[in-house]
Image 1: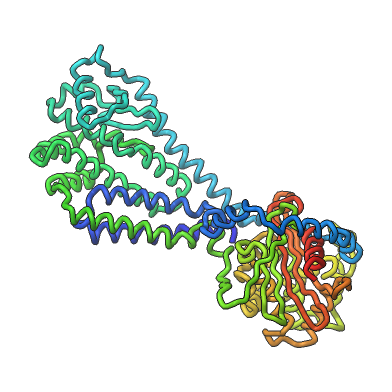
Image 2 (image 1 turned 180 degrees about the vertical axis):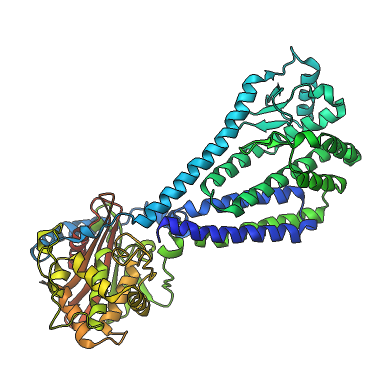
Length: 596
């Protein structure tokens, strides 16, 4: 599944998680301390990161595989020697197979390009919206004057006294501005607090102390970090109104948690005075609100009323309340972790629901044949019902099938009588093709050998997307996702399948599990025949994928007949200039020569 669609689906899941968060906060409010209600936003912010994380890197098995790959294998030297001996067979592949599969690579369709453009444009506009507020505050700060012990000794002394009271040793700069009517805290590396000018004249000393304590608590709670993160996520998720609403509630929880932190310092006996100061200053504090990563003491009328109610009901958290709050926090964290496979990029569609439990599995180390290229190999012994795997993690990872899909495209067309054993020829329409072998009429055999895209695209168009989808679901082909479009769903697009699933499908094909017409099965088998090797007959199909002109995916799948025994195999190469179908075929032949 391509990222724009994956991201949109993730937004639905994230919106549901946000709704669950609100239900937890509302239903268990009496049992949650204000600090935990605020800290829950850290969990939600982490959840927003998951759609951008590659699942294969951060999955536990993926991490273990990377660690295990660093451990030298004792058999590596022996296999490397055999690899060199088998390399003589590499040129054999070129004598019966010509690589045309790279044409299977496709660019993003207009639909996906449009989604990318809209998303990017929205991010730019949202970033400009936040940038305007940031620039506005920085202009105010340049026009303000710095409060120091020299120019405002009493005011600065009280500010430093409040910082000492909170055990803040870092120097936080204080500015006074005539352009604002609401205290503002901001700055990650260089924290700054900016207050309205003449605030010390307008407010009595004890109320000024409350304001200083409140703003300094924002620094002590590291609110600037979460402020910047929420700003960043609002840019990326600009189109999701639930995210914007959620972060508005986040700002309310931030101020309530800060109020409780102040009350914990000044004591419950001063809660009335603190609430009175908030009400007294509320009219002015509703002005000059900023959208960007700043902590401000003001808010809407609803927010002020909510904060006053919280201040009036202030009590120190009991031990039981803290225990329950910790439990709810842990539950929320587990909820996000359990949801992560549905949110991480590629997780939902790229990792198959394949289970290796109950199957006879042997690990085979053929890494020297891969010459440092990331990839996997599966060999299934049909006679003994035994799998041999190299790189189990990648064996079950779904990726684009590229030209290997043509095996089944041809089979579906045979089943629907679009072509037949006696009439599989399709005339070339005269359109100039990237390879000379494509610029002619094609039969199923020639189209399969030369991997002629237009031939199989023609079959798919005649079959129609609805019928294609039915067939892909009938044989359980990977994720069965054809949303990439009938002309390119198979070429680094929406359809995905794992090497392990490729071998299972080939087994089902040879045993005709789907109860297709036997003559059609036989015709596909014949079209896959490549050559007689020293120790058996080789059948197979290559596939190559390119993105932005670079090789990213190389397939060779098929089966090997040795006497009465049949072995289905799938070899895949990833993310390398050598990741092509022809390279995958040569590697497979070397491995088969080594094994047999």
